[in-house]
Structures are given as structure tokens and as C-alpha cells.
Length: 117
Image (cartoon, rainbow, N blue to C red; front, side, top):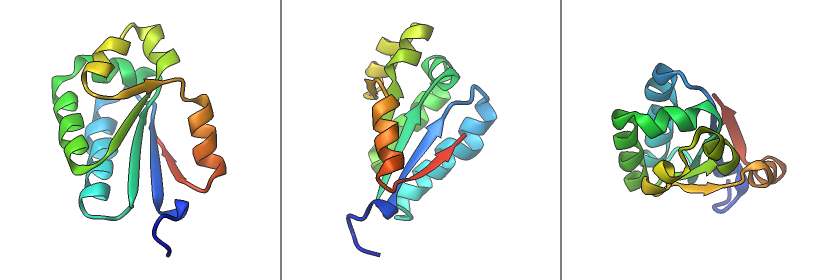
């Protein structure tokens, strides 16, 4: 597979407010995917109830920092974070908070692998 090919890019769309899903799948897989080189690019998208969970959970916030250090990119849906009143909390975690409808559509149309949880 060619380097730079979108086939080697992963976006994980995390929408669940379930803490166990976050710890035992979302963060574990994205962190290891980048750390072990399973994917060239790994982006974790925080959307919906996951934004509220992350804004109040210190352990998950620590995992964000660890994953960022490994090279995982983080984006959050601004519409969702505004609804929950947590936009500033997410920005303080160095998460890019933007309206995600168009970026997600572009990921899907441009051959990224998208995993939804």
C-alpha cells in the first residue's frame, strides 16, 4: 500500500456515553493503532454524549493526553459540545473543536476507514 494513501487513515467516531466502551475499546484501540503503526493517521472524533463524558472524566482526559503524545489527532463536534456546554473544557485538552458534519463527510468520501462506536 502506498504511503499517503487514504486507505491507511482511520477515523474513529466516538458517540457513546458508555465509559467502558471508551476505556476498553475507543482509547485502547486508537492509542495502540498509532503507537504500533497499524495506521499512518488516526483521528478520534468526539461526537454527541461522548463530549459530555470526556469533559468530566479525569481518567479519560489523561488517556487523551497519552494518545496525543503517541500522535492520535482529536476533533470534537462543536454543535454537540455547545449543546452540552463543554466546548471550553474540550479546548483545554488541546482538542480541535469544529463543526464536524463536513469533515466527517470528507473522510467518508475520500476513502478513510471509519469506525463508529
